[in-house]
Each structure stands twice: as C-alpha cells, then as structure tokens.
Image (tube, rainbow, N blue to C red; front, side):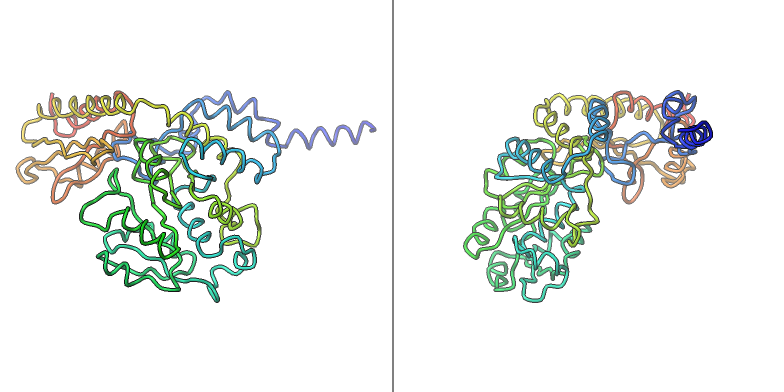
Length: 396
C-alpha cells in the first residue's frame, strides 16, 4: 500500500465511531446527563415507562461478551431454551421481547402449529381457527398482544358459558394471572380451564407477568400442565428490559420459534431478540430462581415502615399501608391530606416530586393523595422520600 492510500485509510478509520471507544469510557459526565435526561427514583413499581427495573450488574459483562461474536440465533435459542425449561419445569422454552412478545408468539403458535404455510399467511386466518376464549374479568390492555394475530376474543363469565363457547374455531384460551396468583375465586379456575381445554383440544396460555415473585409460581404453572406460560424478563427478574420468556409444550414452542425472528416471512419478525438479550435474560433467570424472596420482602417492609414513621412527622398527613398484592408483597405507603387546609394538591405534590432533586416517580391515590411503592427500588430510597416530602410540606 503506498503512503497516500495508507494515509487515506488511516484518516477514514479515525472517523469511524468505534475508534474513539476508549475515550468514551472516560467521559466526565454520565450518559443521561449528556443527553439532558434526569433519572428518577422508582417509587412507582414495575412500570415499563420508567425502565421497569435495573439489570443485575453482573449481566453487563456477559452481554457485552455476547455482542462480540456471531452465532446462529436459532442454535442459541435452543441451548438457552434447554436451560430455562429445566429451571421452569416445562417441556421447552424460548426468549421473547417481553411478556407481550411471548403472548403474541404463543397465540401465533396456537394458530399455525408447525405449518410453515400458515406461518407465512398470518394475520390472514383463512382456513385456520380464529377465536381465543377469555374471561371477561381478564380483559386488559395487554390482550392486544393476542389480537395482533387477527383473532377474535370471545368473552365468557361462567364455567357453563366457557363450555358453550368452545367450537371448531377455538384456537386457545388466554388466562390472566394477576396480583401474584392465579386462583382468584371470582373467576373460572385455572384448573377448570385446563380441563376444558384438554378435553376440547385447545391450549391454555397464562400471562404470568404479574406472578413474579416468587419463581415458584411459574414452576407451579408448569407442573399443572399449562401449555403456554408468558413471563417478563425485564421487571422483577431484572434481566434486559426488552426480554421475556415463553415456556410450555414442546410442539407449541417449536411453532412459536417458526413465527419469530430470524424467520423473515413471519408475523413475529419485528419482535427481534438479540443474542445479548438472550444471554442476559437466561443469566437473570438462573440468578432469580435462587433468590431469597423472603429477604427481599423484609427489605421492602423495612423501607415502607421507615417511610411511614417519618411521614407521620409531617403535620396534616394521614399515612397508611395499603394491602400488598397477595403473594407479590408489594409494599404501598398511602399519603392523604386536606388539600384546602394544607394548600397543596396531589397534582402539585407529584409535580414537585418529579421536579426536585432527586426526581421521584410515584403513583396517585384515588380520590386524593399519593402512593409510594417499595418493590423495585434501591435501599435508601425511603430516606429520599421522607426528605423530599418534608421539603414539599415545609417541615424542619
């Protein structure tokens, strides 16, 4: 190579962004500060809008390592699926884009099976089953992930209605696992749904995003024979936010994989999972399955109790603990007051919490007040809450 060409090449390489990577690690400002984005203290809970949770620190190095090599994604899905299915107790498993991605791909699997021609036709349901059963009480914003496939949701309210709704068009039953359990007495039991589905020949899908913690809940679902289990990897599990797990019957997981990336002519192609996320959520699940959930509960209780003690020192505030979500042990501190007497509304309190330092994200209480959730935050958040509320209500 002559001098001129070598100089040109070196000049071009100097412009390549990765050539400056070492310098980027020495930045004087944080990445969010550089963008003008202020982080928040999470007293809201497992909400996607604020990032859901923080990844386990030990995932970062493994995910960075994964990004430095090319692999066949289908092979990686297979190997990780084997590990996850052992943790869950299911026949098979795969990585998805969150629990919502698992719901869509699981529905696709129930519609197409392993028929690749049907995979290519979705969401055109010509010649396929086209209905998914759902209890009216289980309707929620996330059942849009079922409707993405073009199916019609058929609502039922009683066991008799469920049995009467089953027909040749029934592809699946969607069951919402909420508030940390699935055996809500006011709904048709999961056991009854599974029995009816088994007799009629359709699978039952459980949206288990709200069933963690503990890990034992998804293991119970697998032991019960639930054909499709949808899990969030980016909330309490603390994997990559854009990750999830679909576990269940081997043939249905195989069908879900056919409906997903890297297959190009598939409804699930846009729901692409990178190798980094696959590694991240697998390692998160391995860690999560071994956690001491009782210890986590104790920490949340201690934070909530501290907040209650300190907030009671603010004259005019009424402080109470809202019941936790059954098995999930979500601790909620409810703060109410006479707005006219204290001269501050709930809206203004929330605005000041978000505008101050640190910035604190909360829930609103109805009809009045605010709620501080201690579930996915950090130790010490309760002290920040107490300090900021004393500042807002001018105490001290």
